[in-house]
Each structure stands twice: as structure tokens, then as C-alpha cells.
Length: 154
Image 1: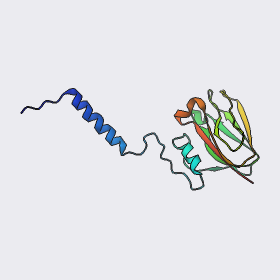
Image 2: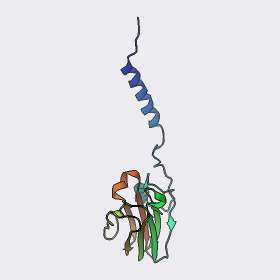
Image 3: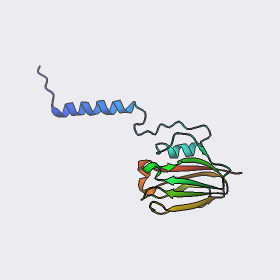
């Protein structure tokens, strides 16, 4: 009996092999971040796959004012992307590159949205209530431009 392979059969087998190989890998897009135990689960979930996140929390508690870069290092990132602040802290986001927003997805206080802004712009928000603040850059959410604050009561 003569067996012949058709082009479609070879393509199907190749596709199945590639998909099967990727299924066993950790996330190829870098979302396998190991977060410190002090990072709340909702924050870790929000930042899974985010840019400029290594799993650690930048402690900025005790400061009445802090600045976070928007478009940090010329990329789709906040700097720092994950920080702990005290209640009553005023956070100022400062644009390092153009075409980004700071838009809340979840916050213990009022929601906020900076609107689309350009290099040199700033946006301020004071956090009076303890809780987790999750935010994104609307145009670049899918590219990992996400950030979070853990607001602790003093």
C-alpha cells in the first residue's frame, strides 16, 4: 500500500506540534511574576504581565507627596509600577513620553482619569482612604502599561 503525505497534513501536524509545545511553557509574554507576600492578590492579578514590575513593592509610606513617571524609560510603563503609600499622600504622575493616560480601574475612593497627555504634563490625586488602587494607560493597557498603589492607613 502506498502512503502519500499531502501539504495540508504536514501543516496540520506542524501546527499541532507547535501549539502542544507552547502549552507546556510558562507564559511566553512574561506574566509569570513572583510577587512578594505583602502584595495583595488583587494587585498581583492586575499587574500580572505588566511592564516594569518585578514583584516587589516600592515602599513610599511616610511621604506626603510622591511622583510616578508615566512612560518610564521611554516605554509603556509606570515608574514605579507598584508602590505602597500612606493615606493622605498626594501622588503626581509625570509624563516622560507622550500619548498616555492614568485611568483608575479600581480605587477605594473616587475614580480618576487624567485624559490623554503629553511629555511634561502632570496629574495629581490624593488618596484619603486605605485600599488598593489599580490603574492603566487606556491606549496601552494590552501592552502591559498598568500600575497599582497599595494605600495604607497611617
